[in-house]
Amino acid sequence: VWEESCIANEVPEVELVTVEKFVPQLLNLDIDEVGVNFSKGCYPGQEVVARLHYLGKSKRRMRAFECDGEIEVGDELLVTNSTSAKASGIIVRRVKLASKSLCLATVEIAHEDDEITLNNSQKTKLTRIHND
Image 1: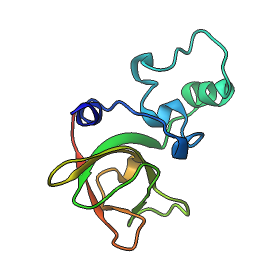
Image 2: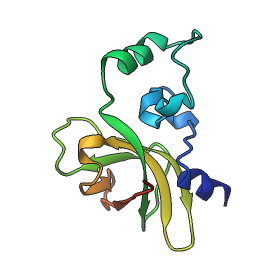
Image 3: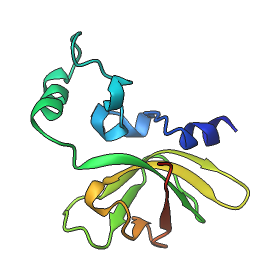
Image 4: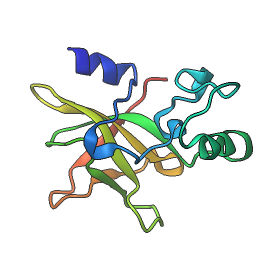
């Protein structure tokens, strides 16, 4: 129930396999400064995070998905329409329910509603859950 609630409310959790894979903007922690305060403090990586906030725009964001297959935190995602040479996203958090799995994953904003699959032999399809 806890993990399901965290996914429904888009609360990320960085685990050992995903350490150093995200900046706060990818996990939506910059929205309303929920997880990052841009007006104070010093921390490792602050320059990169501030530069993206003030001068750029994140090309990826965290979104909620569901699928019928097995998923693990750290699994990579592929988007058929993407021209990116690297993975189109990463599983951030997941929970297995009786009939399906729910997850939070980073994904390219331009392709968040395209066909998204896990980068595995089964090419497990993920369906976006629209919480907005």
